[in-house]
Each structure stands twice: as C-alpha cells, then as structure tokens.
Length: 236
Image (cartoon, rainbow, N blue to C red):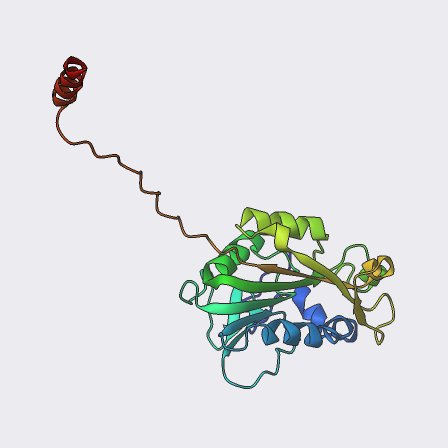
C-alpha cells in the first residue's frame, strides 16, 4: 500500500496504476484500442462508459455518447468526480470498458456489481487486466499492481451476477518486447502481457402467464343427471 500523502502534497493518482504511464505500461495499452473499438461497434446507438487506468487513452469514438472516467485514488474522475456507487441510472449504458482500472485490487466486487447495475440487459462488459503468467510481469514487479488469472476474474464476475458461461477470453499485448503487441487466443498467446474478458449481462426472461385450465361446464345438478338416467332405464 502506498504511504498516504501529507496535507501539503497535491492529490495524485494511486501509485501502482501510475505504471501504465511508463513506456512498459504504454506497450500493454497500445494494442487495446482496436479491441475496445470492436466492442463499441456492437452497440452503435447506446451510451457507453469507459473506466480506465491513469495513462490509458479512452476510445476516440465521435458522437458524444461515451462517459470517460479515470481511476483516481479511491474513486474516479473525468466527466464527473465520484466514488462508489457510480452516479448513473440503472440499466442506462449499453457497454462498459474497464481498462486496467482494477489492476491495483481496488474494490473489485463493488465495481463489478455497479457495472452490472448500470448495464442494460444484454449489454457488454469488456474487462482488460494484467496477465500474471506473462514474462512481462517482470516489468511491473514491485509496483504494487495485482494481476489475477482468468479464473479469478471469472469467479468475481460470477459473484456479482454475470453469466460466466458467456465469457470470451483473449490474450493481448507483448510477450516481453515493449513494442511488439498483438491479440490472440492460441496457446502461445497465453504468455502475452494482458488479458481481456468480454461478458454480456444476462437478459432475464419474462415469466410467462400460467396456461388457462380447460373447464368443462355441466348443466344441471348431479341429481338431475341421475333422474334422467333412471327415466331412460324405465323406458327400455
């Protein structure tokens, strides 16, 4: 944990996430722009929300439908400055891009829970994080960053109500060289510096009305049926 700043120091971002402003950190971020643009292309009409690490560049998508917030100490700043809960209406955005905003371990379950609240049914959450199995981890060692494997992120998504059976996973960024980064899903790609999970918010099915029972109407009382039956026997 970084030491708290004194009253005379300017308020700064959390020290671990400042690594993304370094050359090594920019090497991870550079390849993610295309991946984010692809996610936003899938919801062209809906508003979207970007929550990014300091040093990350938000998607450059014209139209004014995006709200851009960067992690800042115990919350976020940008279009608004806020802590949790996020100051947005429930089910108000079609996509949320979490670009390394949780790589310092900040309130993971709380943030994901808020993402689930703010997303529209069927909306998309794209989460980029560091890969703990990559050789690139030597470049962020001793910075305070906390990398979790895909299973850890899937468990967090499950705890916060996302349908993990819809998760798609990519490995992205460099293996070791800062300037060489791509996206892939093959075995060799599993050593890339970053991972990206994409998951859709579950659409709750409407409860169908109970089927109407077929009623068989009978006329008269049971006694009248007996009288008619006895009369028929006597006529025989």
